[in-house]
Length: 193
Image 1: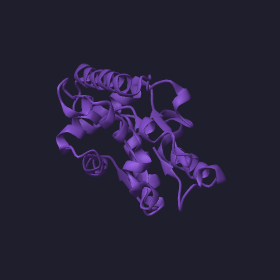
Image 2: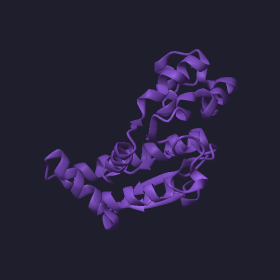
Image 3: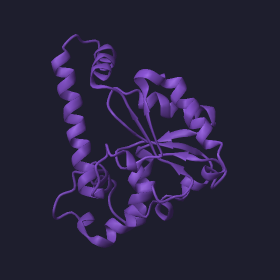
Image 4: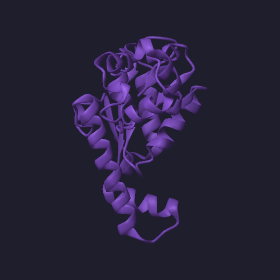
C-alpha cells in the first residue's frame, strides 16, 4: 500500500489487517532483506528510504536484484500472517506477486492538511502543507530512483482509494471485496501492498 501523508492510509491498512487477524508491515521488511543480501540493516534501510550513498554496497547490481526479488527475499509474505505491507516501495517490490493487491490511498491536499493539522494540534497551515509537500517530493524521488516509476501513476495499482469521499470504512470494505476474489487468493489470504 502506498499512501499520501494525511490520507488515512495507515488507518485503512490497520483496519484491513485487524479484520484478518494479520498485521501491517513496514520495518519488518528490513531484517530478512539484510540477511538475504548479507548487509547491515542500516544499508537496507537507506536503500528502501532512497538514501544509499554512491559507494555503499547496495550500489552493486547483484544486491539490488536480491532486494528487489521480494517473494524469495521475504518468504514470510506467504505464511498467512501478513495482510498489509505499507511503504513507498511496497507496490513495486511486491507488484509481481500475483495475489498481492496493489493499493494507493489518497485524498485532496486540503483534506490532508486539515487532518494533519488536527493530528498535530496546530493551526499553522503553511508548515503542515510544506511537510506534506516535502514528503511527496521524497516519495517521488525514491520511487523514481529505485523503480523508474511515478508513484502517482494509477497503472501501478489495482485500486486507488480516495478517503475524502469514501472514508476509511468504505476503503476497507472495497479491499475486503477484492480479497474475496479468486484472483487475489494465491495463498491462505491475499495481501495488500
